[in-house]
Length: 97
Image 1 (cartoon, rainbow, N blue to C red):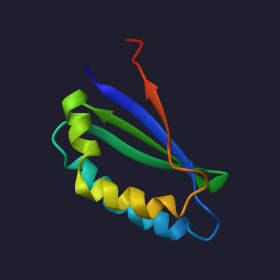
Image 2 (image 1 turned 120 degrees about the horizontal axis):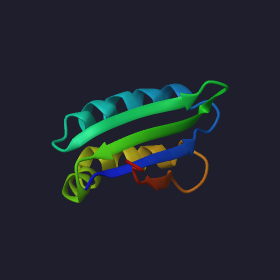
Image 3 (image 1 turned 90 degrees about the vertical axis):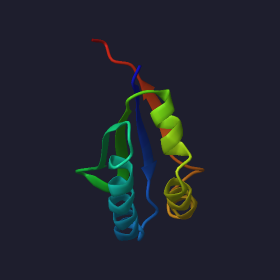
Image 4 (image 1 turned 180 degrees about the vertical axis):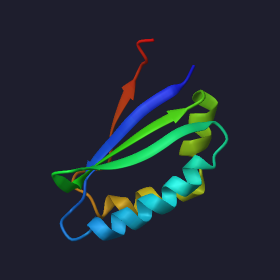
């Protein structure tokens, strides 16, 4: 069964460009992972500090591989100092089809 989620976070003022660079680099890595079906980052049109990332993984094994990738830890460690709060808020989704 697919693992579908979105992550959201708010960037601290002045860090928008760096987070964009980081996200573009991360997206390249994640999209190359076996079992990744989608990794699509967005910002709100009216607030470029508000980020949303839509992610789909083929199954739990693909998601587990994703969260243990070393580049993910590097990304999250730097991101922690550039965003509001303690980290991304994750919302798990289920298809209605």
